[in-house]
Image (tube, rainbow, N blue to C red; front, side, top):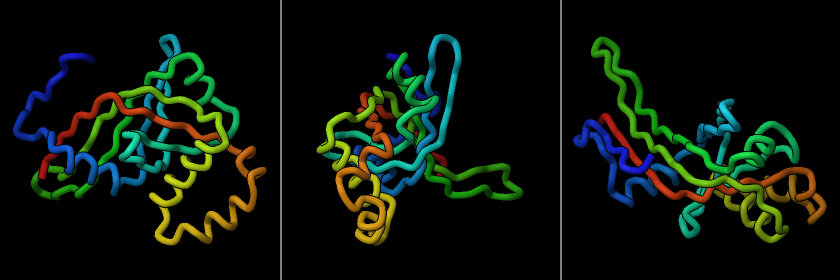
Length: 160
């Protein structure tokens, strides 16, 4: 989608700090995938790694997501900061981001550890008990997959 631009420039979010803030405070991303002419979309919780400009996700070690990504790693995702509907005004307040990039399954144990740490730290107020309960040793990492979305492009829009 090279060359795409927002019709309403007054609603564009272009400040990198604001974009990073939305990703850092968000919890869910809807991920759109495609294989051939078959679309698939799934909403997943994520962890944001600003240093790598990436989102990390966890999923089962086999399934539809991995099948789609195996055929086409290009994805589009959205993260929405919902500020609520204004009744009687037919107006919704929000900030939203559309991310485009490539999603891949993480293979190395070290990066799986990094990815799940990013995700747990992002989602949990007190991550240590969650880590201790779910990741007692390295064999625990064999029970799930970690996906990494390497972000190539972000566009943002708001109505505040």
